[in-house]
Length: 512
Image (tube, rainbow, N blue to C red; front, side, top):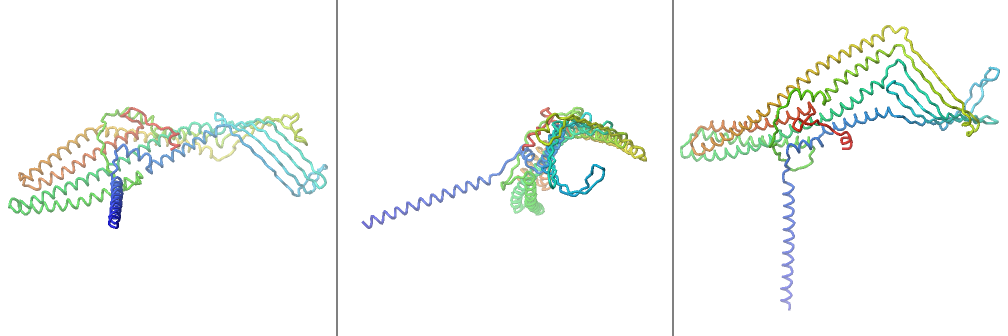
C-alpha cells in the first residue's frame, strides 16, 4: 500500500511540474511574440507623412491658432453691426452730505441732505454703416427718495419709450471703410492658412527625403562594407597565389576600412535625421521608421498664364495688394475730414412722466423732443490739416509704387516656379536612367573583378562612387520634384493635377 501511494504521489508531482513548465513556456512565447510585435518597424509613405504633419506638427498648430484668432476677430466685427441690447441700472445711489440749497428768494443755505436714487434703463442701439450714424431705442425708470429730519418724499420718473439718432454730417465714416476692409482681411487670413498648410507639406517633404536619403545612405554603406569585405578576402587568396600585387591588396584593405567608417557615419546621420523627423511630426513612439519612396509621379505641363491667373485670384498676396491700397485710401479720407468743418445732429423723441406713485408715472405720458446740431469750424491750425492730407497722399502713392514692384516680383517668382516644375519630368527621367546605368556598370565591374578579368582596382572604385552618387542623385531629383509640386500649390492655391482650387471650411478648422 505504501509503495502504491508513493508511486501515485510521484506521478502527481511529475504531472504538476510538467503543467507549470508548459505554463511558463506559454508565457515566455507570448512575451517574445509581443516584444517582436513591438519591434516591428513603422512603414510610412510620403502621403501619410504629409497628412501627419498637417495635423500634428508645430507649424500646423500655429497656423490653426492664427486662423482661429482671425475668425473670432471677424465674428466680433460682424457682431458690432448687429443690434446691441443693453441694461444699465443703479441699485441704489445713496448720498448723505451737506450742500448749498437754493431758497425762494435766491439765497442759499447749507443743509444736510439725504437721498437715494434708483434707476434702470434698457436700450437697443444699431450702427448705420452707410451713413456712419447710430440709432437707438430705450426705455427707463428712475426713483428719487429724499429723507428729511421730519419727513421724506418719493418721486418716480418714467420714460416708456425714447427713439433717437446721432449722425455726423461731414466726418470720417469708419463704418463704411471697415465694411470693405474687414471682410478682405478675413478672406486673406483664410488664404494664409491654406498657404501655411502647403508650407507644412513642403517642410514635411524635406524631412521625409532627408530621412529617406539617410536611410538609403546607410543601406549603401552596409552594402559597400559587405562588398569590400568579400573582395578583400578574395584578394588575399589571389595575393598568396601571386596573381595581384601587394599594392592592390592594401588598396582593398583601405577601401574596407573606409566602408566600415562610412557605416558608422551613415548610422549617426540616420539617427539624427530620425530624431528631427519624429520631433517635427510629434511621433511619440520608440518604433523604428522605414520610409517608403513614392513610386508614382504625375507629369504634366502647367501654363504660365493659367498659373498667374490662379495666383492673382486665389492667394493672399493678390488680396493683400488690394487691401493695402484700400487702407491707404481710408487714411487719406480720414486726413481730409479730420480738422475740417464738421457738424453732427443729435435728435430724439420720447414719452415721459413723473409722479409720486409708481403706477401713476405711466399715466398720460408727455412727449419729449430734443434736437441738437453741433458744428466745428477750425479757424487757424497753422497748416496741420493740410500737412496730414499731404502725408496721406504721399503714403498712398508710396503704397501703390511698392505694390507695383511687389506684383512684378510675385509674377516673376510664379514664372520661375512654373518653368522649374515643367522641367522636372526630364530631370527625374535622367536621374532614374543614370541610377540604372551606374548600378549596372558597378555590378558588371564587380563581377569582372571577382573573376579576374578586371585588374585595376581604381576602375572598381570609380564604378562604386558613380553608383552611390547616381542613387543619391535620383532621390535628390525626387525630392526636388515634390518640393516643386507643393511650392506651386502654395503660390497659386490651385491643384493642377486635380484641376481644382484648394479651399477649407472655417468651421472644420475651428472645431479641430
